[in-house]
Amino acid sequence: GAVVSQHPSRVICKSGTSVKIECRSLDFQATTMFWYRQFPKQSLMLMATSNEGSKATYEQGVEKDKFLINHASLTLSTLTVTSAHPEDSSFYICSARLQGGLSYNEQFFGPGTRLTVL
Amino acid sequence: AQSVTQLDSHVSVSEGTPVLLRCNYSSSYSPSLFWYVQHPNKGLQLLLKYTSAATLVKGINGFEAEFKKSETSFHLTKPSAHMSDAAEYFCVVSDRFKAAGNKLTFGGGTRVLVKP
Image 1 (cartoon, helix red, strand yellow):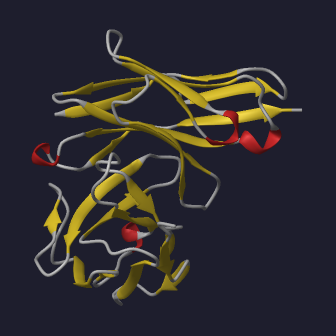
Image 2 (cartoon, chains in turn orange, red):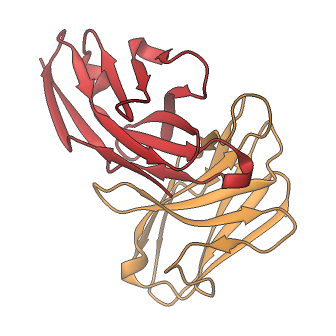
């Protein structure tokens, strides 16, 4: 249980285009999902917290107009990288939080999406 | 505020020998602590978690970690390394109670190399 999927797994796009990444919780409902960014050989950095039915909460330094997050249902959050540039190339990972019980704050991670902007 | 320091960026061990990955944390509240493993170009897999129960936590694949509040440490160990253990390992802290926020803070990661 508690499986999270991401689509696509890899995407290559031209500079200036927009790219949408989907994150789905397959066997549970997630009112809260998280988007992370990981540069090569570095740790994960939280970009934003996605809340179902409300606006996302962005971390300091993350441009909300560039990284659009939509959490329209209890099983789907999307991250759209708008007007992508080569410096946006990165590994993007989403997670979903399992609420309740003794596992406060445990998050289940998707397999990641490798974005390359040419 | 919370933070995590992984004391070794790289660890190299021989197959069959013990593995020790060191992690120190700071947290304003009672912490939840996690160890995740990431294989190349893959997502994160949970190895084990501490959420206020037993201080010695056993995880998957023979890994275990001990929560030591006095030392603010949560070191990860495995008695005998396997070639498949070669990966990146992340120590992660979270404030346990929802009122304190539910963000995860990641350590910088430790890359494990296993020599035959």
